[in-house]
Image 1: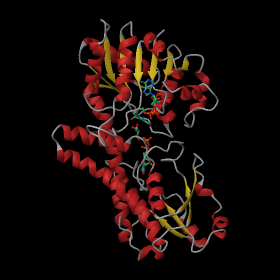
Image 2: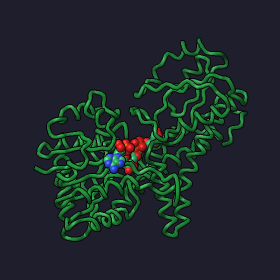
Image 3: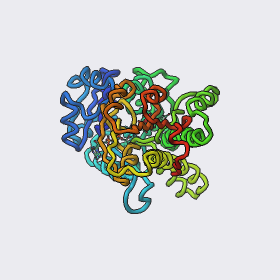
Length: 425
Ligand SMILES: NC(=O)c1ccc[n+]([C@@H]2O[C@H](COP(=O)([O-])OP(=O)(O)OC[C@H]3O[C@@H](n4cnc5c(N)ncnc54)[C@H](O)[C@@H]3O)[C@@H](O)[C@H]2O)c1
Ligand SMILES: O=c1ccn([C@@H]2O[C@H](COP(=O)(O)OP(=O)(O)O[C@H]3O[C@H](CO)[C@@H](O)[C@H](O)[C@H]3O)[C@@H](O)[C@H]2O)c(=O)[nH]1
């Protein structure tokens, strides 16, 4: 029986391994973590993360061929294939602080693998890492290998939170990078065989290691760039009377551009986009490519601009001060259908409002119910003029205006109340 061990029972490790276990009953999958509370939660009825469909998959496999454990060393030493899915946040101190990926967790996982391994292993980079990380990992492993053969593969994960299970069950592609040696190719084949249990062969792409590592950063940079592009347009729409939803629709109808990921918003958030673009920027700088670095940096600058612009709209509309005013923040996670608040744009918006001394009440139901609230009742209980600022364009602005609200919707023709108010970021 093939044994898989995944180091890191987080947003990626947990759901990814649960789906592998579901689709590969002949494989034993152990997910290990240093966090006892996380592992206890995975073994309980209250899973540590919320993802639609996840509970169902876990319940089907847990205790059969899916195990969650803190006995990291035991499972690593027994495994044929080891996925490393630890966190790779942005460095906060030292060389590359604020940009480079912090590989501390990765390095300690690699050293532990080298220490406890007694048989040949395939080590799979699941975490998002800088290009050439595989080379560094290879060095750590081979310098401490005691004659054991380690093959390193890059198998970046493309799931999005909130749709993780669907993304894993029907991925657009599975990307596997490996060495172009016979042993490297054999390792690629072994991992292909795992995914081939449910992913059609033409969706499993094999590349060299560096292409796989870079493709992950590139994909996130392209996705985030679309959002910054449409958000930049949203500012222009507000200035000109165009409607960003109509513009996105018209632009997205071009089959070369496509309709997805063109929703204007208060800005993108989540644990990945900013971190991965900063990482890309740092790699460009280290490779002497400042123009390329600046190009991608602009994606983050526009995102910051969008968050500031939103805060300024709120403050300027309410007579240029929100001091002492009670503001209900509906939704705090970085997107719907998730409980994850890492790098949510709501943090920056709330900070901006608190900076102007607002009183905030924050509510997040995990799933999206804000379209159907009883806005008439809400309006009746509010001090007038009453405002709604929609950072996601989900409320029916016309209906709300009929009730009496002053409504700001990103990138939409402005309410007369807002027309003369400055909202420069
Ligand atoms: N969150 C996403 O949607 C997503 C999607 C694709 C890729 N990624 C990438 O996947 C990686 C993991 O992301 P995540 O969101 O799952 O992170 P996470 O913080 O939710 O999970 C990482 C887990 O690794 C554990 N860990 C750290 N060092 C360890 C060690 N030495 N031994 C055992 N366990 C250890 C931590 O305790 C934590 O539980 C990151 O590189 C991220 O960029 C994330
Ligand atoms: O048209 C859009 C689409 C998304 N967003 C925002 O962008 C952020 C990121 O959303 P999304 O990409 O759906 O979620 P993530 O879970 O961050 O997933 C991204 O980051 C993961 C981690 O690397 C990748 O694996 C995924 O492919 C990639 O989509 C969220 O704040 C969204 O609200 C918009 O503002 N407008």
